[in-house]
Amino acid sequence: MGMMFALQSQGNLYRKRVQLMETGKRRGLGEEELMVSLSGSQGEGSEEREGGRTIWTIGGGKGGSGKTFIAVNLGICLSRFGDEVVLIDTDLGGANIHTFLGLSYPKRTLSDLINKRVEGIRDVVIETDIPNLGLVVGAQDLLNAANPKDQQKWKLIRHINSLDVDYIILDLGAGSSFNVLDFFLISKNKILVVTPEPTCIENTYRFIKSAFFRKVKKVISHFGVKEIIDKAMDQRNERGIKTPFDIIELAGEIDKSISLRLEHELEIFRPKLIINQVRTKNDVDMGFSMQSAFLKYFGISMDYLGYVVYDDEVWQSIQRRKPLVLEFPQSKASKCINEITLKLILDKPFLFNSEG
Image (cartoon, rainbow, N blue to C red; front, side, top):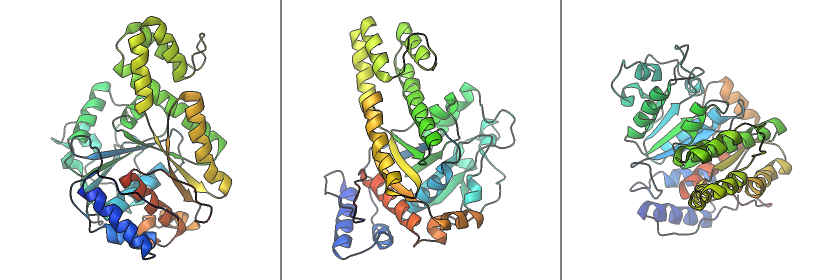
């Protein structure tokens, strides 16, 4: 697909993987063969990690965009490198990630952790048939599971951060509730999954704006600025506060140092984007359009990771309760996911290649 990665000095594993990819490209290897060649390269990770592990949170606001599908298949692609990966279904109250792996609802889930029936999150990690891939299933049997108390939520987040594995992938529920936003924000690797439909795109704009407002409210202690942020989260606020720019400007009137802090938070708040179910070049270009719009209107930089094509074999794999990259490894959608995984590992944005 015209993918080229430059060699950078960010660790032995990084350099080794880049060298393998460049060698593979010169030899004409495809994505599937590249994944196999890369699977032997183990060692110290190149990415900046949260407490020795890399966490990816996958959200987007609207249900049905394919977040769980992407999470499962990305996790499998990662596990092929020999890294230990744990998928966590944080869609509390509507857990279904186990279905995508062809598993029955397990005996132990997050509800056991929330209700203190187990000591730690490791006790609810279940083994799968896929080497190096573990799974934590969300709670289905609690009436209030979808809205855990604040104390329970932060305890759960601490448990997630305590997992001693290479990669943790959080599959988030739909919507923009505080609980969903807080799970989304626990990692710097925040991934948005969007379908090229007006309703999904609109929900994504609302979701990411709410996520940023939620983040800055937690790092800014000034009461007056927090009040401004509260107003901004109300779409019909009387002061017409709609964007991070508005908050920064008003905060500057209160305290210049706070506005500078907000500018810094805006600069480092860098979500990543995947467009799912792509049918046309216009759908592909939607990712670039969203990139430009976020930067222009919100001041938020976004990394466009790439797209997953619309593929009948995706539907077939879901019906069979088999992950796509295992059931149909040569499908177009599988190859898209393989390439997105590599870009995530090597931290490379998507560059459209009209010939690829």
